[in-house]
Amino acid sequence: MKGKWLRDYLGIILGTVITALALNIFLIPNKIAAGGISGLATVLHHTFGLPVGMTMLAFDIPMFLVAVKILGARFGLNTLLGAGILAVTIDLTAPLVPLLTRDLMLNSLYGGILAGIGMGIVFKFKGTTAGTDLTAAIINKLTGISIGQSLLGVDFFVIALAGIVFGSAELSLYGLISLFVTTQIIDLVQEGASTAKAFFIMSNSSAEVADAIMDELGRGVTFLSGRGAYTQADREVVLCVVSTREVSHLKELVYRIDRQAFVIVASAHEVLGEGFSSHR
Image (tube, rainbow, N blue to C red; front, side):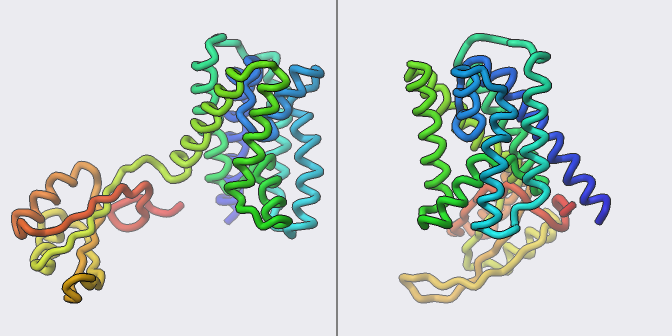
């Protein structure tokens, strides 16, 4: 338990450092406000010269206290740790990191990628960097608006504000690109790349197909109960998860046995259990 606790906090620290580097190298110097508290702090930094990290923390702490009061004490040490380390790291590393390019497209893409990696690591280790996710949770509690819609609304407001303050609709468009890339990378880090495929096989020879899969591929098989809506006939659906390199073999195996089989192949982003990854 102690080792897991230590691993989680080290992961949160690593993720916040990566996120801070993304902001300082690519986004903040180029006035790209990709939503959230960091985007608002970027606007205030370029308008009034305020340090981005401490500005973020100044917004995060009151929101955290309000969230605890409204939502309960489910926001704990991990939230303060992530927000605090991110704020301090941003301000400490700002004078040290290089400006790699002035190309706004490159900065929005690579800033989004690196920020997504950092935030994805933080979330993967059960942390959070506070910010707009707390705001969205508060809005959801008070108004009933979904968290997803609340997040979208808050981020859109920040990005639009940046365009107005900086007098550039183009910067808002680049901010949207960076925000989109960040959200996609966060999902990729948390769920993993599609490294396995789930097969749903409907066949009149389901038992024979299952036996062949276990014998030839050495993969486990599960029978699911199904019923045809048109025929009202009961039949077994064969569920099997295989690695990507085994996809062609499994397709050939199924259609060798039953040319009329109906097969659905779905991407499985993370598979835990025998033959795949173990839960750590």
